[in-house]
Length: 177
Image (cartoon, rainbow, N blue to C red; front, side, top):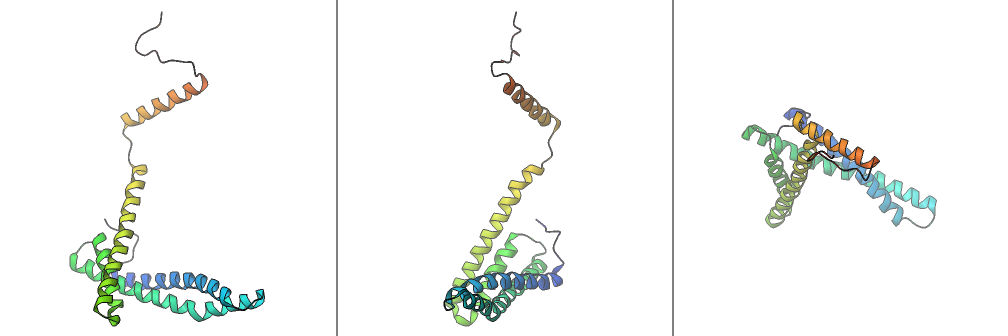
């Protein structure tokens, strides 16, 4: 399963880092705006200023954390692509587990292992959903053989005629007198 729309590996790390920063900054801005609005003193003007101040103070930090995660994930993914010589869902799952473990390394071995397991499980779920969606949507792009096309046309034709005349019957087995 190859992704043709992605950049080659050295540039993929930078692209994923920037994309992760953008997602983190926008998501962090929305979350911090709500949090700042709720925690500000009474009055709409004060609440709006509180929300804006929280966005300025924290959304860049959240974006930076996402960027570090994205860069680490992509670097490990590119390393696995180079070592294994193929791109498949296992690379993403292993990269997610390794990234979770590496980023939690400062907090101890137990935390590192649990973060690695959680990262691997999350990426396995994401990859599984991606595979399921691609299999589900691939059926709509499947080539239809002429025999199947004729059967579909016949079925649609019978449905159209049954709508106009609900009392009509199909006399294909025997000819009426």
